[in-house]
Amino acid sequence: MKPAGKAIEIVIVGLGQAGGNLAAEFARRGYRAIALNTADTDLKSLSRSGLSLPEEQRMYIGIDGYDGAGSDLSYGRECITVHAGKIRERISEHAAGADAVLITAGLGGGTGSAVAELIRTLADLSLPLLVLATLPNEHESGIAKVNAVRAVNELVKENLLGWVFVDNARLAKNHGAVSLDKYYAEINKIIAEPLDALNQLNSRDDITAIRSLDGEDFRTLLLSGGIITFASTTLPRLSVDAVVQAVRDGILHSSINPEGFQLENVSYMGVVIEAPDSLLADTPYTFFEHINEQLKDETGGAAIHMGVYRTSDKQGLATLRVFCSSQALPDGIQEMVAAAKREGGQLRAKLQRGLSGLDLGEIEEYELFRTSPGTVRRRLTDTSSGDIPSRLPPKPAPVRKPAATPITTVRDTTRPAASIPPPHTASMPDRDAYDQLVKEFKESDSEDVKKRVSQRLEKDQKSDNSLIRYYAVRAMSKLDPELFGAALQAATQDEDATVRAVAMKALNK
Ligand SMILES: Nc1nc2c(ncn2[C@@H]2O[C@H](COP(=O)(O)OP(=O)(O)OP(=O)(O)O)[C@@H](O)[C@H]2O)c(=O)[nH]1
Ligand SMILES: [Mg+2]
Image (cartoon, rainbow, N blue to C red; front, side, top):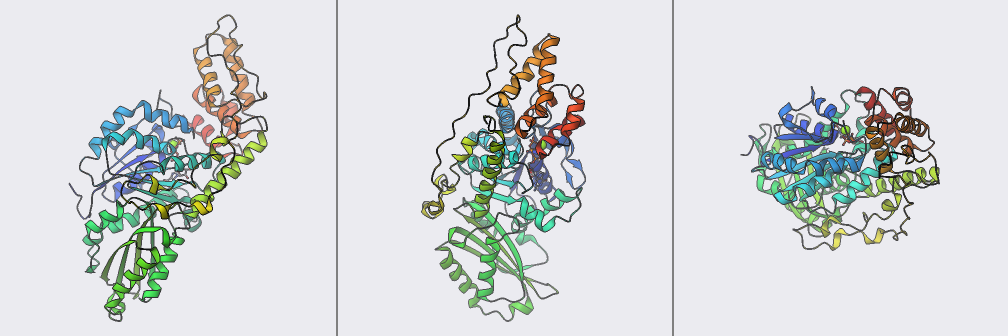
């Protein structure tokens, strides 16, 4: 059943902490929402004012009681795979009868970045899926950026009805003065507002329709299949040129979505003008038609849905709301890819000892610039405008993955410690190697083995290489945070934000 005051029923599924916080914001606005997380601590934080979701709308999907993915994308994916059955069951119940299912997630951590795995898990349910994903801030670690780029690359290949990318860096620039304790609650309001505003346009008491953008128009726009961007601005007067210019600037420099959406890539557009009588009285009847024609012209034939509403704005200003879907990734996402490559590259340059864990080879092989969502979309037939071939970099030769540090998987009780490689050997151990250390520590009865694993992890926590420190700290957090108290304490001062976060979380357990 459609919720009161909304044109269409959108239900929300939040994944990871950011996803859960966004789900809570939509719930505050009257949407049905649930949050999935690998961390019980994050789910519990959804009882705070401003970011709250009742307990029965939270679902723990961690493994073995671990608290969060600690930025480990493979673990995030694994959690979803392990709980696939119960996730499908829960979401199918939750989404019953919905016009659209919006999955919210923050890209950068290990849980939200696994959002494509969640989408694949839900594929059999044939739900009308959209995704709203935040991109990391500039100050976030290289690991967060690499996770985010991988997630974007996976996401655009999924068969979805729409993608909304949110640029956390732009939001931080404009709202960075908000206090730390209220920051996410505040920016999540800003993120949810444009979608909600359009969905409840025709139930608002403060505006009356002159020409309405109705619920079916909104449904067509939202489910048109493409990268969605929003913009809103105020205008002191209404003229065709001023409105078209504001639409162009608004989507090029959206304050929520990544920079660089171009009018010529837009395939569907909704334009809503809310204006007081003082402005409407001076606006000729043909205005509406002219804007429509000019936008159609500049977009190369996009479907334009327009609405004009009368408001009682005291300052005499008109509000312009723009919603459009485009078939090309905006420049802002390409910049993020460049930053991930750069910072991943710096990390690699620091290492020189091998980099199987971060796997930059894969990053450099990303097809992000090649893959237009148009190639996977099911509705639009003309995908030619969606590709960005002119900006394609030549495909670099794949970087060969160094072999992972050999770790014996067969238990040899006569030589209990033989499988532990020395730190800082020629090639850097990857995540599996550290998982193996955790396993050996847990399964071994030998004090000698436990001691050698501990010494190894403590030594690696001091490594010059942030990825080694990250894996070591993550392993400590899976073992006994008390035993590794001193090392974890030291790691809370680490120069890498992700290492600090994992250590803090372990100590708070
Ligand atoms: N807009 C917005 N962004 C957020 C919020 N919380 C976190 N983020 C962003 O989302 C990214 C991912 O962080 P989390 O959501 O905490 O990570 P996670 O998905 O829980 O993953 P793990 O903690 O590794 O299990 C961060 O790098 C931030 O950029 C939020 O409430 N709103
Ligand atoms: Mg988390």
